[in-house]
Length: 206
Image 1: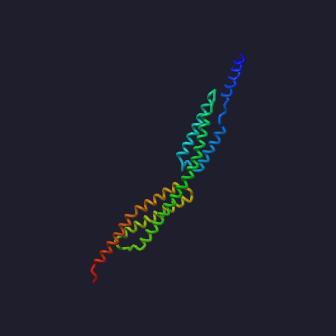
Image 2: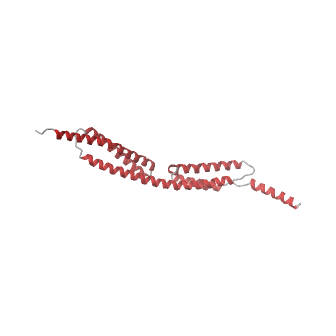
Image 3: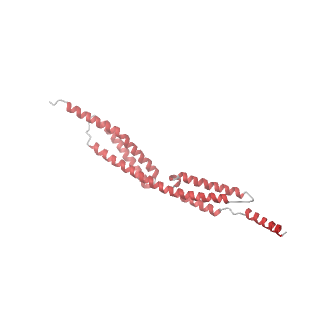
C-alpha cells in the first residue's frame, strides 16, 4: 500500500520535472558569443568551412530547442550537446583563421619580394638595351608590362598592409604570373638585338 502511494507520489513529480525542463538559454548566449568571436577573427573568410560548420551546428541546436519547447515532456540534452560542439567548432575556426592568415601573409610577402627582385634585375638588364636595333616595339611592350607589374605589386603591398590578405595574395599571384609570361617577350627582344649586331659585324667596312 505504501509502495503504491510512493509510486503515485514520485510519478507526478518526475513528470513535472521533465515537463518544466529549462531551455539552455545561457549556453545559447555563450555559443553565439563564440561565433561572434570567430567572425571578428575573420574565420568566415580565412576558415570558412570550420566557421560554417559551427554556424550550422548552432542552427541545428536552436531548431532542436524550438521543437522541444512545443512538447509537454521537454528534453534539451541533444540541444546542449550541439551547443557544446558548436562552441568548440567556433573556437577551432578562430584558431584556424589566425593560422591561415599568418600563412597567407608570409607567402604573399615572399611572392612580392621575389617579383620585386626579378623586376629590378629585368629593369637593370634592359636599361642598357640599345634602341633602333629592330626590337623597339618589343622593348616598348616590355616597358608597359613592367609598369603594369609594378602597379600590381604596389596594390598587393597596400592590401597586405591594410589586412586585406586574400586580395593581396591574388594580386601578388597575378604579378608573379605576369613576370613569368614576360620572359618570352624579353627573349625575343634580345634575340632581335643580337641578330642586328651580327648583321652589323658582317657588313664590309669601307
